[in-house]
Image 1 (cartoon, rainbow, N blue to C red):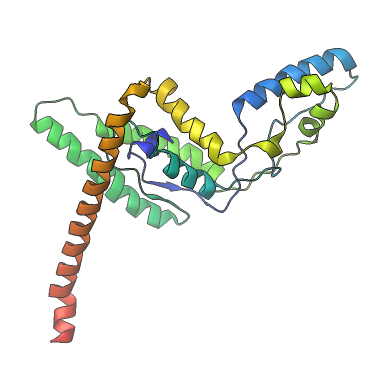
Image 2 (tube, rainbow, N blue to C red):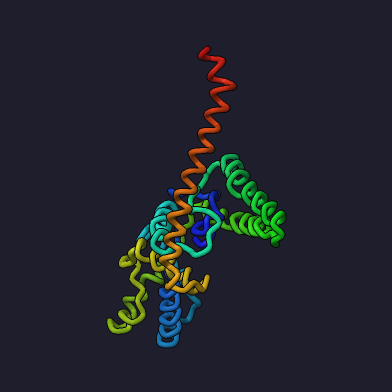
Length: 239
């Protein structure tokens, strides 16, 4: 989310129709506490496994997660961005590699050359190498459908008192994924990147400026493509 929000990640191998089996970490902690408590009270003879997963109870696809991220990064943009957030997931390897070259590697080398000429330390190519490695690991999960039995997890709320169930909340059905990712973006900004909330107005101005810059660059790029195509192909066909 941070990499995409900063405009660094613009393509990845991901089937946006596949369900993403994520669960809020506070619900994982709640479940761990309840499991320890119930294990001490019930003293089971056999070791049981409890998958702390969502497993389709309140489904969300990767596409939904990305859309929510695009929406809420506008409210909580980052103070330092390489470019305006954009791009899309790919399911075709060749399509992804082409996009990777034009939107990841080419800009990274361009910026590093520019930094080198200006006498500054280069870093973008190193960042992209780390990004590529991370995406390579992540795509194992974003290109496959995963299914876990979570019956033990769903039974927790029925095995404790009403008061304990309210304190150690485990009801997956009540998660609002849009709101969850909204707080996720805000939390990533404040706690992962250590950005002061007071910098939000400036960050939002930067976000708008990058939007218009991104739009202008796209118009120029596609105009040049059309010009080259017209002069080398269409002109000969038409005339």
